[in-house]
Structures are given as C-alpha cells and as structure tokens.
Length: 330
Image (cartoon, rainbow, N blue to C red):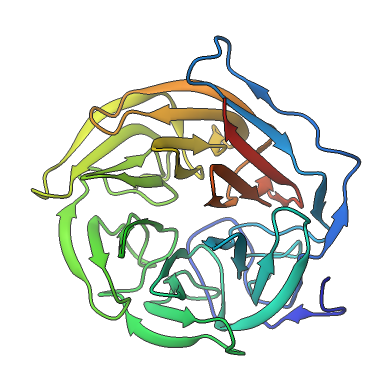
C-alpha cells in the first residue's frame, strides 16, 4: 500500500527540456485499472513481442523517473509530477500486484537522470531540477535517504545509463550549456573512465548494452532536432560509429535488453508520442519493428524483471500519464 499523503519535496534542478521545474509533487499512488488491455504484436509471430497495459495503474502521473530492477521488484525514483515539479521519492513497486510503498528519499529532487543497480545499491546519475547536477546519488534498502557518493566529470542531465554485469555505462546528455559526447564507465559510481566519444552527441537517446556492444538509438542533437542515427560502440576497442539509421527520427524513447534482445519502446517522432517497439541488432545497428505498446508514450521509466520489460508512466505531449505497461517476448 502507499504511504498516505506522501509528497515529494521541491529542490534544485535540471536540463533544457520543455518540462517545468521545482515545486512539490505527489507520490505516484496505485489504483486498479479495469483489466489489462490494449497492446499488439507485429505481423509474423517469429521475433515479435506483445505489450499490454497492466491491470493496475499509478493514481498519480509521473514522467522522466529513474526505474531500476531490484530482485522481483522495481524501484521508482524521482521524476516529474503532473504539475511539472521534480520529486525526491524512492518507491518500491511490485509488478505482480501493483503495490507501491515509499522506502526512502533522494538526496535532492531529480528528473531526467540515469539509473543503475550495482552491488546492492540503487544509483542515480546526474539529472537535475532547476539546474543540472553532476552528482551520483546512492540508496540501499534500509536507509531513509540517499547520499551523494560521487560526481560525474561534469554536470549531465537527459542522459542514458545501461548496465552489464557490475559495470554501468553513462552516455549522452546535456551539461546545461552543451551536449556531452563522452561515454563513461563505472563500477562504483565514484570514479569514471571515458571509453569512447559518440560521433553524434545526443540527449534523450535510448541506450543498451549487449556483450561487447553498446547501442545509442536516436536522441536529440545540438540543433534541437531528433535524429534517426543508430550509434554502435565496441566496448573492447572504444571504436564508436554511426552504424545505421531508423526509418524515422526518434527521441525521448527508452531501451532495455530482454532475453538478449535490444528493444526500444515509445518516444517521439516530430513531437508526437509513439507506440512502436523496435528491435535493434547490436552488431550492425539495423532496426525492425516487432510490436506496439498498448499506450503511446515518451519519457517513461523502464526496467526488466525476469523476461518482462516494465514501462512506467511517461508523457503524451506535455502531459504526464499514470499508465503501466508490460512488454513480453512473443
């Protein structure tokens, strides 16, 4: 159950997005939805995925949160509430029941950050509220509040984080004045190594890691326009290249690896929220459509539990939504 009346304090803050910053935000409470609904799979069963709305939804909308898996649960951290205010709540969400409990608070209200779960701790990289952060916030179950355990080389919001084993990769993003092309790796959250430079610096890209390949799909370029480029980085050599292009220019999408497959969900095309689910070949960057979300959204938080990708909240246009969607392999 939700802690009644939980609110999320205002704070400093973020990046060059259209979202408002500051102010208080309500916790993303859970209510029942009238049965799982919607969703579809791409024509031709092999390799397709299915997506449905969960039989419950958040009672309060949230967009641009950090979501990471913790065992059989999800941690939902920060984000923007329906009023556009950055929030600081850390919530444990049960995908099987929709039960949501506040378990802690971030050190500072944050949205447009990246997240990872390493060595038993949830890490939140960068983001911001009214200014862009360089902080790495860490929270471990049993603690009331997160603490700052490190700093990025420079402030970074609108970034993507992907993990492989005990290493987290931070890519894309905006410093408050310029795009950041550096791809960073860390196993601690307190020290970082630059392993590559993106040929096309982006923010709001969709990033994932499979084996020795990292892919960055789409994103917004320095011109303010979305791009169709799919960038592939060889993590062994540090070589980064534009390997392919999507059929459309896409930004504000999310990516995760499900069953060894790189999926990209939602996002925006010409500022219109999308339902398309793409599968990306990490060896050459080629993309194919494998399904559709039940609800078209951008700027969701995503994480994988088992073989299910959970899509939490997000936006339709400038409006935060309370939808929860589950994506499964066909």
